[in-house]
Image 1: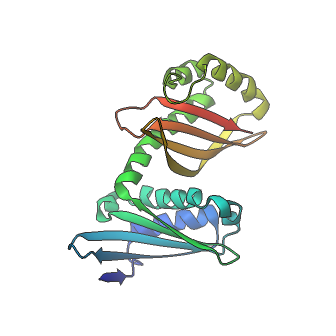
Image 2: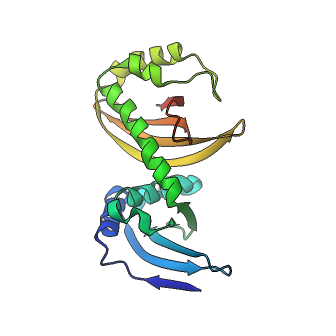
Amino acid sequence: MMIITSCNSHLEETRGVDEVISYYGGNCKYSVGTSISTNNSTNHYLELELSNSQSLEPFIDIADLPASNIAYLCYHHLDNNKTTYNQINTILVFKGGKRVSFSYATSQLDMVEKKMLVLDKVISLLKMHNYRDIKALLDDKAQFKYNKDTLVSSIIKAEPVLGDIKGFKTLGFQIITIDGIDLLHLSGVIERKKTSHQFSIDIDTDLNKNQIINLQYKL
C-alpha cells in the first residue's frame, strides 16, 4: 500500500526544492509519501522529480552524481524535519526522455552532511594557503598509495596559476569500496578567479575517521 500526499505546505522541504531549482534550473516537483511493506514496516519518504534542466544534460551517463546532489541539497535544508523521513528519492528526466530514479536513506545523507564539514575545512585551508594543515589531514598509507609531500607540493604550485578561490559548488557523492572498506567520494567544483576546476576527496564512511584518504584536482 502506498499513500502519497502533497507537501506544498512544508516550508523546509520547499526551501530544499528552491535550492535544487536555483542550482539546476528546470522544473522540480515533489511529494511526500508513506509506503507500507508486506511485513508492516513503514517508510516515510520525500520524492523530487527534476525535468527540463539544461544543467542536467551533461550528466546523462553519470546520473547518480546529480541525483545524489539533489538528495543532499534537499536533506541539508530540512533542518527540524530531518527525522521526518527515512529516505529521499530523486527522479531525473532527461531531454531525450530517459528517466532514472535513485533512493537515498536519510541516515546515509546525514553521514554525507557530517563528512561535508571535512571538505569545507579543506576549502577553507586552501583559501588561507595553509598547506601544513592540509597535509596533516591526508592519509597516504590507506587504500590509495601516494606521497602526500609530493601531492601538497603540486597543490602549492597550482594555486597561483588557478587564482584565488571564490566559492565551492557540490556535484554529488558516491560510495566506493576498496579493500573491503567503504569510502565516501565527495565531488564538486572550486570556483576560481582564473580557472575553476573539479575537486574531490575520498574519506572513510566511519564517522570517527576524518582523515582524507585521497584528494584530487581535475583541471
